[in-house]
Image (cartoon, rainbow, N blue to C red):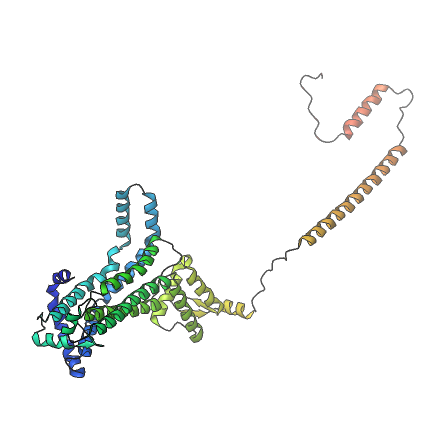
Length: 430
């Protein structure tokens, strides 16, 4: 650790200068040799660094969300070029370039914070050894060595020997109790921050390997910090605990005010926005108008949370507009009050017994109809037969030629025959 810290010795001067400036401020209030003066100086150093890193944190949020949105496409590329790793890498880089996504952007705050962390570690190690470093002269070094936080010197470690702790004017028991509590708090804050991200601010509708990696990190990071924490001075533990608490609070603000689309946090956010709109009858803030405008612009691409939000607005009698505002909708109000045109109701589903009885009734009706038709047909046949019996055949007159009768009969038959006649076969005689 000392070797790594020495690599960042170039930044120890600005870090020590910032600590000295804050120490002058707090020393005038709490006393120059107190743990409050030196401890609050370290806390103020963290706050100043994290404020400067806010732009990087914004980039981290955007990069993380872009990576989440790209997970389905990345998975498709991996499956398509499973046997060609080089082509797979080329397609991945092409996808990053087209979407403007940088995978390393999610690590920028940690990478940017690392030099300050190791520089502070280097400063505190020199304070424990009683050596001057950066802006800290021998008088300030001796003052820092006398500073205790809850009975533990800011330069002491959990693994220090009893002699080293006694040289700093403290007991080994006090040092180990204070450092153990700080290590537990540091690991717990890291776990809670990662768990909050996974449980509330992740789109649960997309199941990707990225989510599994985040779950693994949720358990691995606290263990890493716990193992490394036994070698950190108390001042470094104060630094890291403060930065974890800052990260947790910063993330809670982002989750509540700018949640990931499709996540539980977005559902809670839209529920709060719905209550505000229904209570005041309008979208009040500019940020809320931007949210409503983005939801309306999505159209059919809205996720489940956004569709529920638009539906709840309609039930409350409001319609979202393209500019992010809402207006009263008469159709929605009429439907909510029950004055709208009644909806067409579907017929009730019949039971099996009702369907069987209905079928039997239909069969009986059909039987009665057939019987009536048969009776009518028989009556018509009897009537036709009687009529044909009443007719008498015409006998030709005496002396009349038979041929003429035949021709008349033929002519009468031809006259009675209607419709198109069937053509004769070519082989038949004429």
